[in-house]
Length: 312
Ligand code: BYC
Image (cartoon, rainbow, N blue to C red; front, side, top):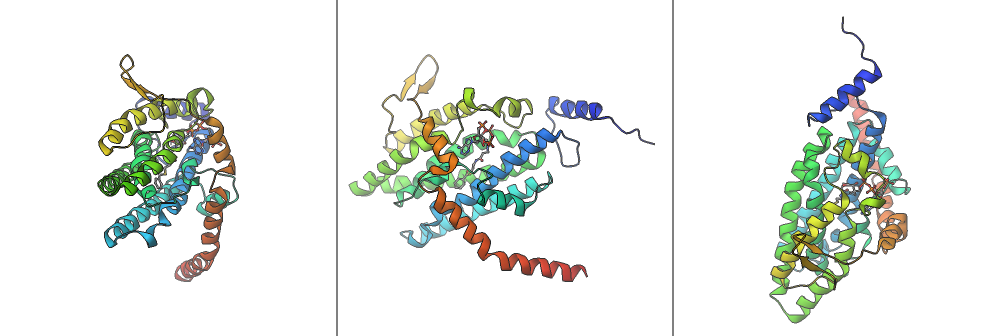
């Protein structure tokens, strides 16, 4: 007969798994607060992928060539796939996918601030690939070592696809930079608009990040928001030089002592405003998501009826 473990023993076992850098799996006991944090982060991440289809998706019908259209279509479909793996990962923690969607469209769960900015020109498609997917890779590569198994494994495939996304963005911008002055201006204008919001993707500064300490202790996050933001700046500056664009920050300069780039202050009030629903496109993004959910109701009903019939 197996002895029933007490809560204290289960907790000790959980901590032991973390201390050996092993994964927590769906079959394992885990503290309720860990489960809640994981569902929160995975759901926000899934929502970001799904809402994140909209800014670029708008350009699928207007892409300037068949090649660009095919690439963009594939990229946007990848984002949908990422959202679906992530909702599945959240389900392994007992979350209900329909409930998560309800929470998104009723404003009770967040998604990344970055997808609340408009995409007025085709250069935005390139800049999203280069900067936004670049920031996403920087943030997500360490998440491949996150302590929750299904999330960490999902992240491996997601990162591979994000790398392709970043390359396609950079290649698109390189092509535009070899074009006319008007095209080069369009690229620089898009870079000017996306640079600061891309820095905000990494979250609030460490001394104003309520979740970082616990998430690091649980090995969900492997680096703080500021560490990853700095890594991203250091990685992006040489890429901007190769491309022939500048970032809109007069204080950006190499610091030989730190072996990193210094950068100017971030407007944290803008991040707060966008997260709380008052960004340039928040209302439009959620209205589109709500409409898609309503338009798809008949498909979900039919699929449920079919599943019931099969079961019977
Ligand atoms: N936007 O204590 P903190 C993609 C929230 S999509 C909105 O630092 P944490 C792509 C934060 O959630 C990839 N909210 O939190 C798709 C928390 O709120 P609650 C998106 C933000 O969790 C299509 C509060 O502020 N990537 O690649 O320790 C096309 C305090 O923050 C933001 C992910 O989702 C923000 N920027 O750290 C192209 C990555 N920043 O829940 C590309 C996974 C913070 O306490 N997530 N908040 O009310 C993470 O790594 C972490 O959750 C974060 C925040 C670094 C974002």
